[in-house]
Image (cartoon, rainbow, N blue to C red; front, side, top):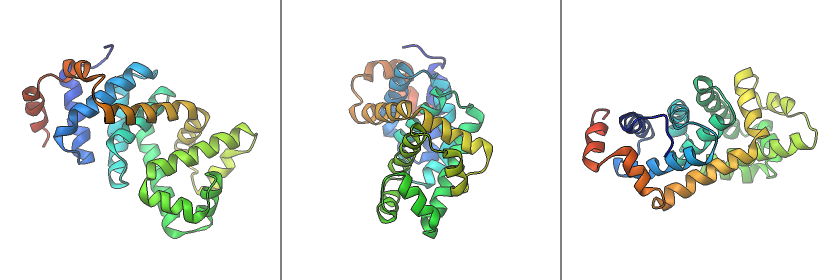
Length: 219
C-alpha cells in the first residue's frame, strides 16, 4: 500500500485521534482500514488525512460525529487541496456556528433548511440525530445552488460564516461535492466491512501487542 507514514507514525497518530474522539482501542483496526481505503482511493496522502482529522476531532467529538465520518470529511478536504493547518479548524468553526443557529431556531435555521431542501423542523431533527449527514445535505444544497448560478458566498454570509478561511473551506467542499460524497462513502463502508483491507491494515499497524504498546503511550 502506498503511504507516506511509517507503521509507528500511523499507530501513534491514530491513537491520539482516538483519544480525542473517545473511541475504544478495539476499533483501531477499523479506523486503520478507513485510512488505508481513503489513501488508496482519493487524491490525498494518509498523513494529510490523519493530520486534518486530528485538527477537526476536538469539535467533531463534542458534536457527536463518528470517527469514520470525521476521517471522511478530513479526507475530502485534503483531496480538495485544503491546507491541513487550516481545514480541520475551519470546518470545526462552521459546525459550531451551525449548531448555534439550530439551537436558537433563528431565521438562519430556516435558510439552512431551505438550502438543504428541508423544513426547519426536518433539518433540526436531522441535526440532533446525525450532524454529519445534516452538514452533508447542506453542502450538497450549496453545490446545487452554485451549479444553478446562485451566489453561495452571500448565502454563507447570511449564516454568519464571514471568516474568509471558513467560507473558503465550505465553498471548496461545495464545489467538490462529488469528492466529499465519495470520501464519506468510502470511510463508512471501510469501517463497517473491515475485511477487504484487513491484511493491508495489519501490515501497517502491526500486531495487536505492538499496537497496544503504542496506544498506551497516549492514554
